[in-house]
Length: 112
Length: 115
Image 1 (cartoon, chains in turn brown, blue):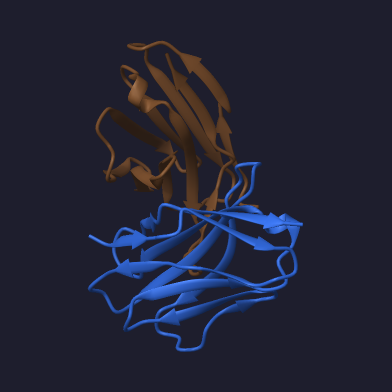
Image 2 (tube, helix red, strand yellow; image 1 turned 90 degrees about the horizontal axis):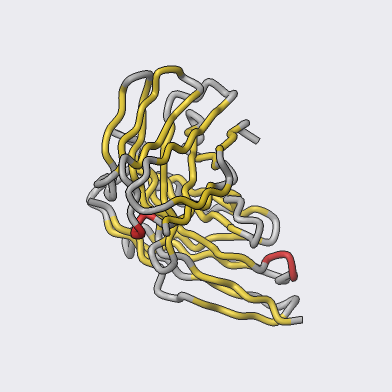
């Protein structure tokens, strides 16, 4: 295991409220990612980070922002949650050399 | 942009038999990695097998093997002697060997094992 912890694991919130999901890793991996998983779409990349304070957009970044102030923490923020952001969110880190991504256990977010 | 396509939303197989899951991808790159991930009901993403594009030999991990056809851009997963614990969603994924190190996933195939 790459030592990835996501919090919270489950959250129910209302439309228009801000939400922050946290990903914490203990492996000192350089790359970190946020994906969302929806039926029929597989996993789609929201944002990723290639170092402290270095982030970039993925294919479904609208409505999301990220921050990485420390190597071990990567935060995903929904500034104003919408029902279309109801999903399961996965954090992942990249183990250098092998190209394999390690995943957290996922965070299920429901926006009512 | 690279894309990955899994054309079989669902598959089923009898326990102890063999099943093949299909995956095709689109890329203009010559150097890349391909992966199959398994997602059981626990939701955890588990790496099943990986293939480097520069290797002609197909990867094998115990009962799991791939048929990598680089020219056809095809990367199928064969599961031999299927077991009940193989029931899961299976995702094919692509990663470039250069650049942003992003993993691109297919839509997934739900595999059911019939006892």
